[in-house]
Length: 181
Image 1 (tube, rainbow, N blue to C red):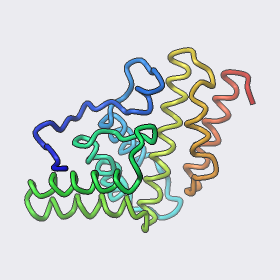
Image 2 (cartoon, rainbow, N blue to C red):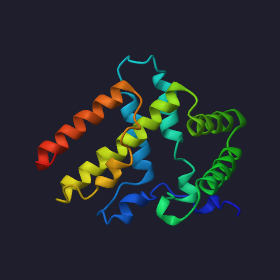
Image 3 (cartoon, one colour):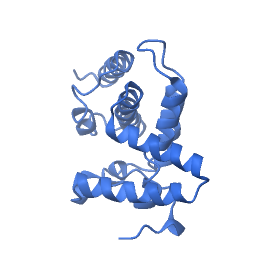
């Protein structure tokens, strides 16, 4: 299926929130921006290249501007999702000056393969942003624990020590706010 770049969007709403009935959910672009800002908050634990992390955060979901935010509930296999996203990022980067396109494509591939410490860290940020956003929506819409499945999907998956600390603090705040342990 050819990728139609004429209809790419920056305001694609994140599918998981739409499916769960969140009012006015964040867009994919909102998510990527927030992740990029979070890369600036990391301390010196793990000797990460912050600039590379920021670039990875800005690129990691870029293809979703074309293919949309594909969620597991849509019945698309991981292989097909990856194929569609790789085709989209290839088409997008082919439109750019060669050096810039090559860098963006390489960042996309680095994130997808998770072979570097920076890519692993940004994946942790991706999961952390999801649960932080879930908690924000629970509070904002007075829906305590209704988005628990997002928290469950990340349990035991965080690797970076500082992000693990953030997750622990978020869970403590969430527990304190609704009295559930």
